[in-house]
Image 1 (spheres, rainbow, N blue to C red):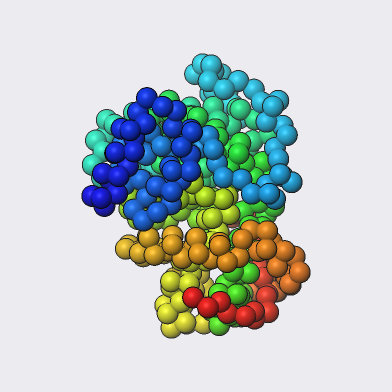
Image 2 (cartoon, rainbow, N blue to C red):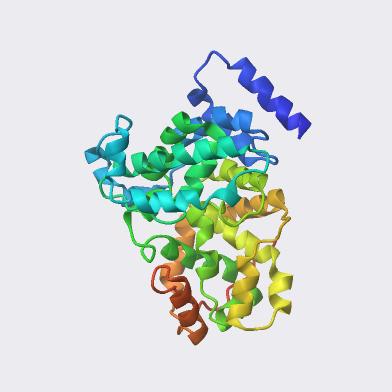
Length: 344
Protein backbone atom coordinates (compact mmCIF):
# COMPACT_ATOMS: atom_id res chain seq x y z
CA UNK A 1 0.00 0.00 0.00
CA UNK A 2 2.97 2.34 0.40
CA UNK A 3 3.37 2.69 -3.36
CA UNK A 4 -0.35 3.36 -3.85
CA UNK A 5 -0.35 5.92 -1.02
CA UNK A 6 2.60 7.74 -2.55
CA UNK A 7 0.97 7.67 -5.97
CA UNK A 8 -2.25 9.29 -4.69
CA UNK A 9 -0.31 11.83 -2.61
CA UNK A 10 1.76 12.82 -5.63
CA UNK A 11 -1.35 13.18 -7.80
CA UNK A 12 -3.16 15.35 -5.25
CA UNK A 13 -0.10 17.54 -4.78
CA UNK A 14 0.37 18.02 -8.53
CA UNK A 15 -3.25 19.13 -8.90
CA UNK A 16 -3.59 20.94 -5.60
CA UNK A 17 -4.60 24.22 -7.21
CA UNK A 18 -6.86 22.67 -9.82
CA UNK A 19 -10.43 21.45 -9.83
CA UNK A 20 -10.35 17.73 -9.06
CA UNK A 21 -13.68 17.33 -10.88
CA UNK A 22 -11.66 17.63 -14.09
CA UNK A 23 -9.79 14.45 -13.17
CA UNK A 24 -12.73 12.21 -12.34
CA UNK A 25 -11.38 9.32 -14.46
CA UNK A 26 -8.12 9.30 -12.52
CA UNK A 27 -9.94 9.40 -9.19
CA UNK A 28 -12.21 6.52 -10.19
CA UNK A 29 -9.19 4.51 -11.21
CA UNK A 30 -7.57 5.08 -7.81
CA UNK A 31 -10.79 4.09 -6.03
CA UNK A 32 -11.43 0.92 -8.03
CA UNK A 33 -7.88 -0.45 -8.19
CA UNK A 34 -6.29 -2.63 -5.51
CA UNK A 35 -6.08 -0.91 -2.15
CA UNK A 36 -8.61 1.76 -3.05
CA UNK A 37 -7.97 5.26 -1.72
CA UNK A 38 -5.82 3.85 1.09
CA UNK A 39 -6.42 6.45 3.82
CA UNK A 40 -9.34 8.52 5.10
CA UNK A 41 -7.26 11.63 4.51
CA UNK A 42 -7.45 10.96 0.78
CA UNK A 43 -11.03 9.75 0.95
CA UNK A 44 -12.15 13.01 2.58
CA UNK A 45 -10.89 14.87 -0.49
CA UNK A 46 -11.92 12.39 -3.16
CA UNK A 47 -15.30 11.00 -2.02
CA UNK A 48 -17.10 14.35 -2.47
CA UNK A 49 -15.77 14.55 -6.03
CA UNK A 50 -16.83 10.99 -6.81
CA UNK A 51 -20.27 11.67 -5.33
CA UNK A 52 -20.71 14.67 -7.63
CA UNK A 53 -19.98 12.45 -10.63
CA UNK A 54 -21.65 9.14 -9.82
CA UNK A 55 -21.44 6.63 -12.64
CA UNK A 56 -24.65 6.35 -14.62
CA UNK A 57 -25.83 3.62 -16.94
CA UNK A 58 -28.15 4.00 -19.93
CA UNK A 59 -31.02 2.27 -18.16
CA UNK A 60 -30.84 4.76 -15.26
CA UNK A 61 -32.52 7.32 -17.49
CA UNK A 62 -35.72 5.27 -17.39
CA UNK A 63 -36.02 5.83 -13.64
CA UNK A 64 -35.06 9.47 -13.19
CA UNK A 65 -36.36 11.12 -10.05
CA UNK A 66 -38.13 14.05 -11.68
CA UNK A 67 -39.40 15.25 -8.33
CA UNK A 68 -35.88 16.27 -7.31
CA UNK A 69 -36.41 19.77 -8.65
CA UNK A 70 -39.42 20.26 -6.38
CA UNK A 71 -37.37 19.48 -3.30
CA UNK A 72 -37.46 21.61 -0.20
CA UNK A 73 -34.60 23.37 1.54
CA UNK A 74 -31.10 21.92 1.65
CA UNK A 75 -29.01 23.26 4.46
CA UNK A 76 -30.74 26.18 6.12
CA UNK A 77 -33.06 24.22 8.42
CA UNK A 78 -32.88 25.02 12.10
CA UNK A 79 -33.00 22.36 14.81
CA UNK A 80 -36.69 22.74 15.61
CA UNK A 81 -37.67 22.45 11.97
CA UNK A 82 -35.68 19.25 11.61
CA UNK A 83 -37.14 17.76 14.78
CA UNK A 84 -40.63 18.29 13.44
CA UNK A 85 -39.90 16.00 10.50
CA UNK A 86 -42.00 12.80 10.76
CA UNK A 87 -38.93 10.57 10.36
CA UNK A 88 -36.85 12.28 13.09
CA UNK A 89 -37.71 9.90 15.95
CA UNK A 90 -36.98 6.72 13.96
CA UNK A 91 -33.72 8.11 12.62
CA UNK A 92 -32.65 9.13 16.11
CA UNK A 93 -33.43 5.67 17.49
CA UNK A 94 -31.34 4.01 14.80
CA UNK A 95 -28.47 6.44 15.25
CA UNK A 96 -28.36 5.67 18.97
CA UNK A 97 -27.85 2.01 18.08
CA UNK A 98 -24.71 2.67 16.02
CA UNK A 99 -22.21 2.25 18.87
CA UNK A 100 -20.70 -0.93 17.42
CA UNK A 101 -20.18 0.73 14.04
CA UNK A 102 -17.59 3.22 15.25
CA UNK A 103 -13.88 2.43 14.85
CA UNK A 104 -12.35 1.36 18.17
CA UNK A 105 -9.88 4.27 18.24
CA UNK A 106 -12.61 6.93 18.45
CA UNK A 107 -13.09 8.52 21.86
CA UNK A 108 -16.47 8.56 23.60
CA UNK A 109 -16.70 12.33 23.22
CA UNK A 110 -15.98 12.13 19.50
CA UNK A 111 -18.53 9.34 19.06
CA UNK A 112 -21.21 11.29 20.92
CA UNK A 113 -20.49 14.38 18.85
CA UNK A 114 -20.77 12.44 15.58
CA UNK A 115 -24.02 10.80 16.67
CA UNK A 116 -25.44 14.21 17.54
CA UNK A 117 -24.55 15.43 14.04
CA UNK A 118 -25.74 12.31 12.24
CA UNK A 119 -29.47 12.52 12.94
CA UNK A 120 -29.81 16.12 11.65
CA UNK A 121 -27.68 15.24 8.63
CA UNK A 122 -29.95 12.33 7.65
CA UNK A 123 -33.13 14.35 8.15
CA UNK A 124 -31.68 17.19 6.07
CA UNK A 125 -31.11 14.70 3.25
CA UNK A 126 -34.67 13.39 3.58
CA UNK A 127 -36.02 16.93 3.42
CA UNK A 128 -34.38 17.54 0.04
CA UNK A 129 -37.13 15.48 -1.56
CA UNK A 130 -40.59 15.35 -0.04
CA UNK A 131 -41.08 11.85 -1.45
CA UNK A 132 -38.08 10.38 0.36
CA UNK A 133 -38.96 7.86 3.06
CA UNK A 134 -36.28 6.77 5.50
CA UNK A 135 -35.42 3.08 5.71
CA UNK A 136 -33.41 1.35 8.42
CA UNK A 137 -29.89 1.03 7.09
CA UNK A 138 -29.58 4.43 5.43
CA UNK A 139 -28.13 5.65 8.73
CA UNK A 140 -25.29 3.12 8.31
CA UNK A 141 -24.41 4.64 4.95
CA UNK A 142 -24.50 8.19 6.30
CA UNK A 143 -22.45 7.20 9.35
CA UNK A 144 -19.66 5.87 7.16
CA UNK A 145 -19.63 9.07 5.12
CA UNK A 146 -19.60 11.35 8.17
CA UNK A 147 -16.76 9.35 9.74
CA UNK A 148 -14.65 9.94 6.64
CA UNK A 149 -15.72 13.38 5.46
CA UNK A 150 -17.03 15.22 8.51
CA UNK A 151 -20.56 16.60 8.83
CA UNK A 152 -20.31 19.50 6.38
CA UNK A 153 -18.97 17.53 3.42
CA UNK A 154 -20.98 14.45 4.38
CA UNK A 155 -24.27 16.23 3.73
CA UNK A 156 -23.37 16.92 0.10
CA UNK A 157 -22.07 13.37 -0.42
CA UNK A 158 -25.17 11.77 1.12
CA UNK A 159 -27.49 14.12 -0.74
CA UNK A 160 -25.88 13.17 -4.05
CA UNK A 161 -26.10 9.47 -3.20
CA UNK A 162 -29.77 9.90 -2.32
CA UNK A 163 -30.66 11.82 -5.47
CA UNK A 164 -28.43 10.25 -8.09
CA UNK A 165 -27.14 6.97 -6.65
CA UNK A 166 -28.74 3.59 -5.94
CA UNK A 167 -30.17 4.84 -2.64
CA UNK A 168 -32.62 7.02 -4.55
CA UNK A 169 -34.72 3.97 -5.38
CA UNK A 170 -34.56 2.68 -1.82
CA UNK A 171 -35.74 6.04 -0.44
CA UNK A 172 -38.49 6.49 -3.02
CA UNK A 173 -39.90 2.99 -3.37
CA UNK A 174 -40.86 0.03 -1.23
CA UNK A 175 -38.20 -2.58 -0.63
CA UNK A 176 -40.10 -5.02 -2.83
CA UNK A 177 -39.93 -2.62 -5.76
CA UNK A 178 -36.33 -1.55 -5.21
CA UNK A 179 -33.66 -3.58 -3.44
CA UNK A 180 -35.44 -6.94 -3.54
CA UNK A 181 -36.05 -6.43 -7.24
CA UNK A 182 -32.33 -5.74 -7.74
CA UNK A 183 -31.37 -8.79 -5.69
CA UNK A 184 -33.32 -10.98 -8.08
CA UNK A 185 -30.43 -10.39 -10.48
CA UNK A 186 -28.11 -12.17 -8.03
CA UNK A 187 -29.48 -15.50 -9.18
CA UNK A 188 -29.02 -14.57 -12.83
CA UNK A 189 -25.33 -13.98 -12.16
CA UNK A 190 -24.96 -17.18 -10.15
CA UNK A 191 -26.78 -19.26 -12.75
CA UNK A 192 -24.23 -18.17 -15.33
CA UNK A 193 -21.13 -18.21 -13.14
CA UNK A 194 -21.79 -21.40 -11.18
CA UNK A 195 -24.94 -23.38 -12.12
CA UNK A 196 -24.29 -25.99 -9.41
CA UNK A 197 -24.22 -23.41 -6.62
CA UNK A 198 -27.24 -21.57 -7.97
CA UNK A 199 -29.16 -24.86 -8.18
CA UNK A 200 -28.43 -25.70 -4.54
CA UNK A 201 -29.59 -22.28 -3.37
CA UNK A 202 -32.69 -22.48 -5.53
CA UNK A 203 -33.61 -25.99 -4.41
CA UNK A 204 -33.71 -24.98 -0.73
CA UNK A 205 -35.73 -21.85 -1.65
CA UNK A 206 -33.06 -19.65 -0.11
CA UNK A 207 -34.28 -16.47 -1.78
CA UNK A 208 -32.43 -13.21 -1.24
CA UNK A 209 -33.32 -12.10 2.28
CA UNK A 210 -29.87 -13.15 3.50
CA UNK A 211 -28.39 -10.35 1.37
CA UNK A 212 -31.01 -7.68 2.03
CA UNK A 213 -28.79 -5.42 4.13
CA UNK A 214 -25.82 -5.72 1.78
CA UNK A 215 -26.90 -3.27 -0.96
CA UNK A 216 -29.14 -1.28 1.42
CA UNK A 217 -26.11 -0.30 3.51
CA UNK A 218 -23.30 -0.89 1.02
CA UNK A 219 -22.26 -3.73 3.35
CA UNK A 220 -21.55 -1.33 6.23
CA UNK A 221 -23.97 -3.18 8.50
CA UNK A 222 -22.45 -6.59 7.75
CA UNK A 223 -18.68 -6.20 7.48
CA UNK A 224 -16.75 -6.51 10.72
CA UNK A 225 -13.99 -3.94 10.21
CA UNK A 226 -14.09 -0.25 9.39
CA UNK A 227 -11.29 -0.54 6.80
CA UNK A 228 -13.31 -3.18 4.95
CA UNK A 229 -16.33 -0.89 4.83
CA UNK A 230 -14.55 2.18 3.49
CA UNK A 231 -12.76 0.03 0.91
CA UNK A 232 -16.14 -1.11 -0.43
CA UNK A 233 -17.37 2.49 -0.46
CA UNK A 234 -14.32 3.46 -2.55
CA UNK A 235 -15.40 1.08 -5.28
CA UNK A 236 -19.13 1.76 -5.10
CA UNK A 237 -18.65 5.53 -5.36
CA UNK A 238 -16.62 5.00 -8.53
CA UNK A 239 -18.75 2.30 -10.17
CA UNK A 240 -22.20 1.78 -11.76
CA UNK A 241 -25.14 1.57 -9.32
CA UNK A 242 -25.62 -2.20 -9.59
CA UNK A 243 -22.03 -2.93 -8.53
CA UNK A 244 -23.12 -3.99 -4.99
CA UNK A 245 -25.22 -6.76 -6.57
CA UNK A 246 -22.16 -8.09 -8.37
CA UNK A 247 -20.28 -7.93 -5.07
CA UNK A 248 -23.10 -9.96 -3.48
CA UNK A 249 -22.56 -12.60 -6.15
CA UNK A 250 -18.78 -12.57 -5.70
CA UNK A 251 -19.15 -13.09 -1.94
CA UNK A 252 -21.56 -15.99 -2.42
CA UNK A 253 -19.23 -17.55 -4.98
CA UNK A 254 -16.28 -17.22 -2.57
CA UNK A 255 -18.31 -19.12 0.02
CA UNK A 256 -19.25 -21.95 -2.31
CA UNK A 257 -17.36 -24.63 -0.37
CA UNK A 258 -19.05 -23.69 2.90
CA UNK A 259 -22.48 -23.62 1.25
CA UNK A 260 -22.06 -27.02 -0.40
CA UNK A 261 -20.87 -28.67 2.83
CA UNK A 262 -23.62 -27.05 4.89
CA UNK A 263 -26.85 -28.91 5.68
CA UNK A 264 -29.18 -28.52 2.71
CA UNK A 265 -31.76 -26.59 4.67
CA UNK A 266 -32.80 -23.02 3.99
CA UNK A 267 -32.31 -21.76 7.59
CA UNK A 268 -28.79 -23.23 7.79
CA UNK A 269 -27.58 -21.68 4.53
CA UNK A 270 -29.33 -18.41 5.33
CA UNK A 271 -27.53 -18.24 8.68
CA UNK A 272 -24.21 -19.13 7.06
CA UNK A 273 -24.43 -16.31 4.54
CA UNK A 274 -25.75 -13.64 6.89
CA UNK A 275 -22.71 -14.11 9.15
CA UNK A 276 -19.93 -12.43 7.22
CA UNK A 277 -16.48 -13.93 7.92
CA UNK A 278 -14.26 -11.79 10.10
CA UNK A 279 -11.53 -11.77 7.47
CA UNK A 280 -12.45 -11.64 3.81
CA UNK A 281 -10.27 -11.20 0.75
CA UNK A 282 -11.50 -7.73 -0.15
CA UNK A 283 -9.51 -7.05 -3.28
CA UNK A 284 -10.18 -10.53 -4.65
CA UNK A 285 -13.94 -10.11 -4.10
CA UNK A 286 -13.97 -6.63 -5.60
CA UNK A 287 -11.87 -7.74 -8.54
CA UNK A 288 -14.19 -10.71 -9.15
CA UNK A 289 -17.25 -8.48 -8.96
CA UNK A 290 -15.87 -6.03 -11.50
CA UNK A 291 -14.98 -8.94 -13.77
CA UNK A 292 -18.50 -10.35 -13.47
CA UNK A 293 -19.90 -6.91 -14.32
CA UNK A 294 -17.72 -6.71 -17.43
CA UNK A 295 -18.94 -10.13 -18.60
CA UNK A 296 -22.60 -9.54 -17.69
CA UNK A 297 -23.25 -5.78 -17.78
CA UNK A 298 -26.44 -4.48 -16.16
CA UNK A 299 -28.46 -4.19 -19.36
CA UNK A 300 -27.67 -7.78 -20.40
CA UNK A 301 -28.30 -8.96 -16.85
CA UNK A 302 -31.76 -7.39 -16.72
CA UNK A 303 -32.61 -8.70 -20.18
CA UNK A 304 -31.62 -12.21 -19.12
CA UNK A 305 -33.84 -11.98 -16.05
CA UNK A 306 -36.87 -10.72 -18.00
CA UNK A 307 -36.55 -13.57 -20.47
CA UNK A 308 -35.87 -16.43 -18.08
CA UNK A 309 -37.33 -15.64 -14.64
CA UNK A 310 -39.81 -18.02 -13.03
CA UNK A 311 -41.08 -17.86 -9.47
CA UNK A 312 -40.40 -20.66 -7.05
CA UNK A 313 -42.81 -21.48 -4.22
CA UNK A 314 -42.04 -19.86 -0.88
CA UNK A 315 -41.00 -22.40 1.70
CA UNK A 316 -42.39 -22.57 5.22
CA UNK A 317 -38.93 -21.63 6.49
CA UNK A 318 -38.98 -18.47 4.40
CA UNK A 319 -42.40 -17.49 5.72
CA UNK A 320 -41.24 -18.02 9.30
CA UNK A 321 -38.03 -16.10 8.76
CA UNK A 322 -39.70 -13.15 7.05
CA UNK A 323 -42.36 -12.96 9.75
CA UNK A 324 -39.59 -12.89 12.36
CA UNK A 325 -37.54 -10.11 10.80
CA UNK A 326 -40.56 -8.15 9.69
CA UNK A 327 -38.78 -6.59 6.71
CA UNK A 328 -40.61 -5.95 3.46
CA UNK A 329 -43.36 -8.44 4.24
CA UNK A 330 -42.06 -11.15 1.94
CA UNK A 331 -38.96 -12.03 -0.02
CA UNK A 332 -38.71 -12.79 -3.69
CA UNK A 333 -37.64 -16.26 -4.66
CA UNK A 334 -36.14 -17.15 -8.00
CA UNK A 335 -36.22 -20.43 -9.84
CA UNK A 336 -33.84 -20.05 -12.76
CA UNK A 337 -32.81 -22.90 -14.98
CA UNK A 338 -29.17 -23.87 -15.23
CA UNK A 339 -27.19 -21.72 -17.60
CA UNK A 340 -23.80 -22.06 -19.21
CA UNK A 341 -20.90 -21.61 -16.81
CA UNK A 342 -18.42 -18.85 -17.44
CA UNK A 343 -14.80 -19.60 -18.13
CA UNK A 344 -12.66 -17.74 -15.60
